[in-house]
Image 1 (cartoon, rainbow, N blue to C red):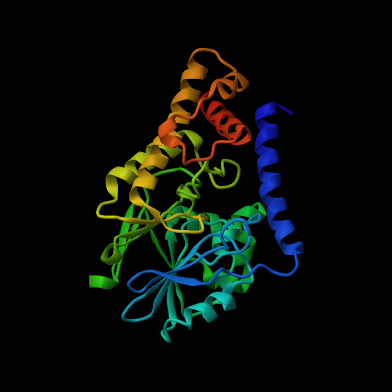
Image 2: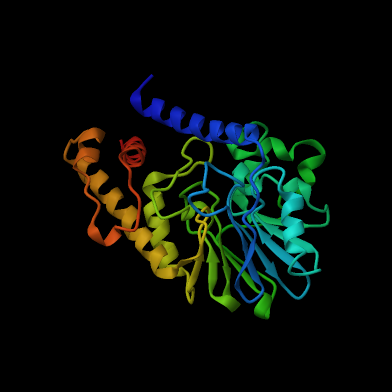
Length: 311
């Protein structure tokens, strides 16, 4: 097996085993709680470090209390539906009426089927297509929506931009291109100047890019980030896919610069005939990105994915 293929398989296996280790771990990790980050907007996150282990409860869930009900963004791993409902009930007696999935992965859509059949599910068209696949790797979570559970597939989709509701209740959905997957959604709450980035901005470090199951792209990830920086207006607060606290708009802008710096150096290395190992050995993180983590293993995976796509 070629090195590039081996890395892709090992990355996939690592993600799957992460899910398996989660299922085997006892007791089941609890959601950290429900924190108000702005008027009517709440974050349900993982416990902060040093308690952070593996995937814990899954991706960050956001609850937005509107005039008519509660809008959720992402539903974590399987088995957390009632936990989410219980926490939401501590801040409002309104029902969950809408669930937006930022992408298909099992740690962001795992509890979709544990909500009321009356909930409207919303996602990018490519995410809906991935959820509806006849077969998929467990990471993509399509098996969750087979048979009677097909009713939980998104009934509302979009391709580039869509707005839900009006006034202070408005939620804006954006898709800027391939990145973590081919169906990533940025969810903006204009009234409180906040965006949930899903896994297009996972944490203060190099991202996992699902090039195996999600049609993600290490090369296009950079331009997608730049389009997001240019296209998202009037945002102050950023909720990343897995970071345990809210971040600033400047953090997101710097993340785009950090990622694109690695991308540029990988492209330069490829053009000059360097190997992946030579690029990684020569990589020096600029001081302006000191807040971001770039371990050699993560740099190696990213550069290899860039080489795979570019050759």
